[in-house]
Amino acid sequence: MYDLRSDTFTKPSDEMRKAMYEAEVGDDVYGEDPTAEKLQRMAEEITGKESSLIVSSGCMGNLIPLMIKGGRGKEVLTSSWSHIVNHEIGAVASLSGTLPVLVPSDYGIMKASEIEKHIHGYAYDMSESAIIETENTTSGIVYPLDELQRIRELADRKSLWVHMDGARIFNASVDSGVSVREYADTASDITFCLSKGLGCPAFSILSGDHDFIEKAKRIRKLLGGGMRQIGILAAAGIYALEHNVERLRDDHEHRKAISEALSGAGWADVVISSTNMIFFRSQYDMDRITAAFRSKGVLFLKEGTMGRIVLNLNISDDDTDAIVRIIKTTGAEDFR
Ligand SMILES: Cc1ncc(COP(=O)(O)O)c(C=O)c1O
Image (tube, rainbow, N blue to C red; front, side, top):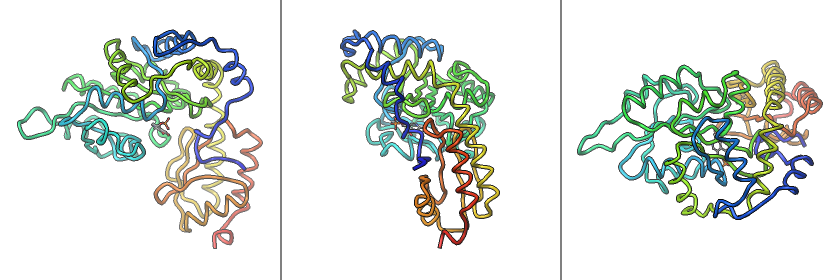
């Protein structure tokens, strides 16, 4: 099976498993796991933030800032495409109590000028804008750096916090040539995932100023995310940051080849093709299309009415050639 459902399906390589096996560990709740500490220091180097914290998942990396800077009667300005709105079981509202305000966007890319129209200042009868949330990449699309800078400028002017969901910030960085640090500079805090294109079995990192991360540690504990000998997993994170970042370029090249094949197939209308993701529509029923491909050994998901393909570490150059051949030999007769 060629698994294109998500980059979360990646499996740790033998080398990564070896690094995990050899990891020095301690009790991280007491701050005594040397491998976890090393990973956190690496994240600070990469993001340029004062402090960092390992969190169990991307969802936790998004929820903690909302709990610290949002809360009842406060608003987070975000796009209708954002992960916090669509794929986190409503934790933004149910656990943090923050009200999401949906800012019109172009497939998740918001403009500072549009965000500004939705900002509420203090009024006795209004919820108060507190956070702007940017997601980079969003549906695989890289946020333009200058727009992020305008958003940060706006946030500073209005005394708002900027949280960046950088689950796939390394995909953005290798694609655009903009460093993760430059992206992180446009946000007050940033979270990024190790468990997606970078190929780790778990974990995300949350980075921000010292005071913010001290608060984040307490909330991580509150949410049941204080873990003990996590160096075993942190070692996978260190391995990934050292070996798997540049490799994301391969995923992007594979995406281009597959996107080109889809565009030429006659039954797919590619809507988004960026970094490691493709979204496409079709005149045929998407359930039938996914079923036809499954029968030929290619797995991908239907999201809304669109097909979604995500390139990842488990797909090699040869696999990509094979997938392209399957696309080229699949057509309307297979979808009936
Ligand atoms: C953009 C984005 N943010 C956050 C997350 C949440 O990550 P996790 O599944 O580790 O909770 C995901 C997961 O796919 C994501 O795509």
